[in-house]
Image (cartoon, rainbow, N blue to C red; front, top):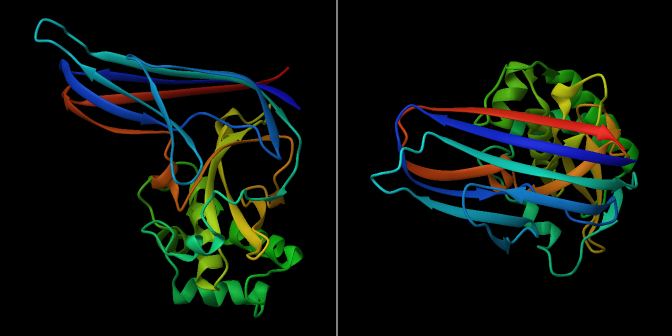
Length: 272
């Protein structure tokens, strides 16, 4: 598929904004599953690019307002065109973290005994460093059933265990639960942020799924969309990876002034 994406984040403030430092993780890269035809990113100030330890492209800017300025609005725009190939299995380059790095627990996707118990029903003593893909897909279907997709039921700070115990969440939570279960069973897994093309469900445009390591020695991974209980396909655009959501959040930063902040995110994906 050839997909065109437009992603706008609109900030409004009740008082003048004096200072802001933001890091933007909204730049997809070409790889096994996609080719980026073109991509642009716009922000209130000049952007500076860097690559983080996960291999993601980050863009950062700093805004410093003078006393004479009355800044109460800012906008971040991302837009571009991506050709997707529907490839779900791939091998990491040697420069990226070893899969064993993703065994470590994080605040939002920490291993837990109850998650391990749930996972053993489907993975059944996985071999060290290796796992069966059929079993992983069965686990993803079970996670989707156990954590029913319920819009507005959680927050970005909700942990995998909290979503699992509540039995509800969104794609972020389902991905976190999948990652945490795999880690609980000694399988490297990581969180993936991205876009999902669904002509009749625009609310799913901002999406998340999980990478699970199939073979640690070969650094071989598979991408699984827990929400749709499938391997990723041509509907998916990969943005970034991390240990959990906080490691690759679309936009994060700090500010001074501005009073109360409101944020509106608009994402449109069209088939070219």
